[in-house]
Amino acid sequence: MDEDAGGASPPPVPLAQAPPPQHPIAVAAAATATAAAPSQRDMAASPTSSRSVTETVNGSHRFVIQGYSLAKGMGVGKHIASETFTVGGYQWAVYFYPDGKNPEDNSVYVSVFIALASDGTDVRALFELTLLDQSGKGKHKVHSHFDRSLESGPYTLKYRGSMWGYKRFFRRTALEASDFLKDDCLKINCTVGVVVSTIDYSRPHSIHVPDSDIGYDFGSLLDSQEGVDVILNVGGERFHAHKLVLAARSHVFRSQLFDDESDGEKSEVNETDELKEFSIDDMEPTVFKAMLHFIYRDTLVDDNELGASSSDGSIFDTLAAKLLAAADKYHLPRLRLLCESYLCKGISVASVASTLALADRHRAMELKAVCLKFSAENLSDTLMSLQL
Image (cartoon, rainbow, N blue to C red; front, top):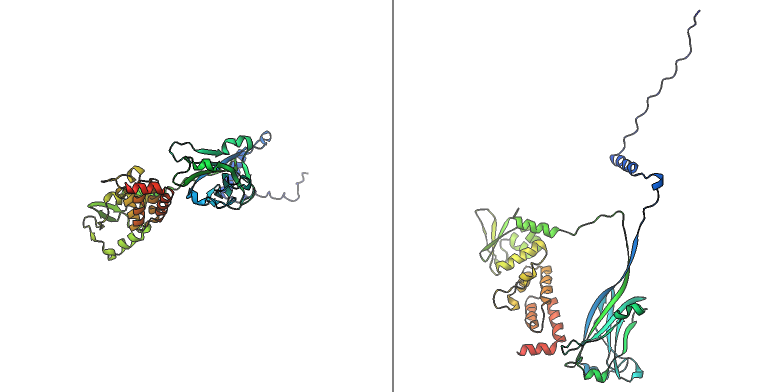
């Protein structure tokens, strides 16, 4: 008799649970890691490299000693100091000893030294002192540490006040009979090269950030004339611009463009395009165009344009001078300094007087200071040029 196989039924097989959803970034990172996972034989670290770069940061200073004969007799060990100047993050000064630094020499020699004038320890540097030949022959007297750097290495200044130089820089009797002394004046060039070391190494992960191009973008906005909402009539030439840009750059424009009553400026509505038109009567179109270039691009026009003169060739007639006047009128301090910097490059014995007058007229204080300093350093030549 067949017997039915009895007993309990087998338990049900549980269904597999789905894994929790993963964030897309986690999925992508895992996939990247899996794809990039090296085999066992490739587990060695990638080679790296670095480079030590030791170089000098160089800077120069010209020290003019006017009234040499009056400085004589001040005493051995007493000096005349130049204005301090900065090279490589440190302050420096030139010390001139008209009666010498060394008592044993009994004032036979003049001494010249370069001193560390700011806090610093173990500052390593190279130096050069040049006594300038004022005859125009170019036969300067050069004492250079740069030429001997391979032999002796840089000089180390231990602390503030440490000096490098020459106790017997030049015999006094020879100096006073030479072309180095002219109109009771000596000129000494000083060059300092501060030694700095940096480590250059490869960065496996870096992102290059380009320079700002906001000036280019705003310049393109001016060139395209897109969204212009004001017309400026300058000597019959009409310039389209954007009121908000002008107002943001100059509070004088802000007052004129958003206050019809300001400063007696004439304004009228152009019925053709319904843009308000302002007349500017005291500026040439070329000057206004150059000012607009700066307002939108934050740069000057080309140097050949800045130096151009429309009539007599005087500095007052150059575009740079007229642009300086515009910067003064419209309170554009950066434009003023850019113009001052450009005009400063052209200062000479022949032009310093007119440049000084220009600077004084338009409150260009930086340019004025340079003119006064240049005149003091070249006093006899400047006075002679004024008499011609």
